[in-house]
Amino acid sequence: MKRFIYTILILLVAAPSVFADKPARSYIIGFYNLENLFDTYHDDGKNDMEYLPDGANEWTEVKYIKKLHNMATVIRAMAEENKAFHSVLGVSEIENRHVLEDLVNQPEIASANFQIVHYDGPDRRGVDVALLYRPEHFKVIESQSIPFTFEGTDIDFGMTAEEKEYFRTRDILMVRGLLDGEMFAFFVAHLPSRLGAKSGSLRDRGGEIIYRRSMELMQEFPGIKIVAMGDMNDNPTDASMTKYVNARENIADVGPENFFSPFLSMFKAGYGSLAYRGAWCIFDIIIVNSNLCNPPKGTLAIMPIVKKKYYARIFQQPFMTHQGGQYKGTPKRTLADTGVEGYSDHYPTYIVVSNK
Image 1 (tube, helix red, strand yellow):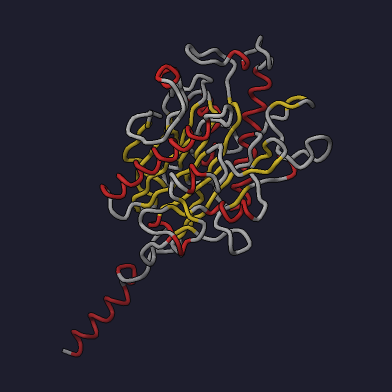
Image 2 (image 1 turned 180 degrees about the horizontal axis):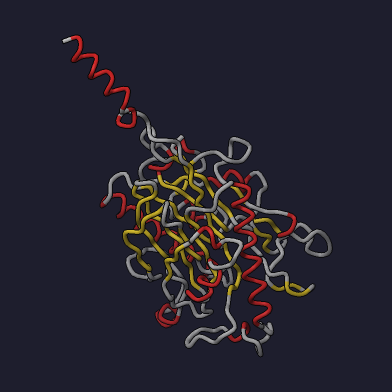
């Protein structure tokens, strides 16, 4: 009997992986508005005339190649800071799949082996959203391009039936899959611009669409972890985020029907991801559902990454920023008075999730 018990103990010691906690893993999830990543060819049905060699921007192959290089340089710089490439990176203002394929094959980031989820959307300007992901980290199960519609809402848009019929904007991308074996859903959005007196209600509707689909997923897949990201064209304090997405500033206030908005406190503290009409804003927002705020022990959770109190990061480096002149301190955009800069008028943002 003693020998039997001794043998069992030896087996338990020899097989610790059965009983030990899962090894600590961290993953970077981010968003980047690539600001008019157009190729040099006309796509039927897209208003890309400005971004052609004979267009207003004289968008030549040389300029396009520089733009790709500089976008890849930013993504590479984030990887160098974090000692790893993004596991998931949402992007906006891209013309088509072709420009994404050119981007992920740039030498600065080709080793990440980013895969692409993209749908051609109805936006009249011809830009879409997409998701880049590393297949060794994230396994795609399904994806959906969610159209922007006016049905099933009580929001007053102040628009005629004809105006609603004519209106077109970006679809909202949803991608569901497994990150480190855990069920996740990622939303990528580029909500309607701030042009026009009626635009606020349109962004409210965009937030409502994200929220309703998120709640459906949480009912269908209990425990699913949801990340919604994008250029919301609103600040974290605006109604589209606080009322229609039901986002909260503090994790302690996040319940099953809420999102946590890590950029809300950062915006109040004076951080910004772009300068809009002379003021710093955070339009490049990432929010997470309650299952990422208070998850079961040993599973992935959002982590504080800035000053040990902010749960998100706005990535900016001197090479991405004007160091002097009229635009000093603001992002170097694709086209400026000084010529082609090739970056973006938005800084990228990201969060980190970990099971530590």
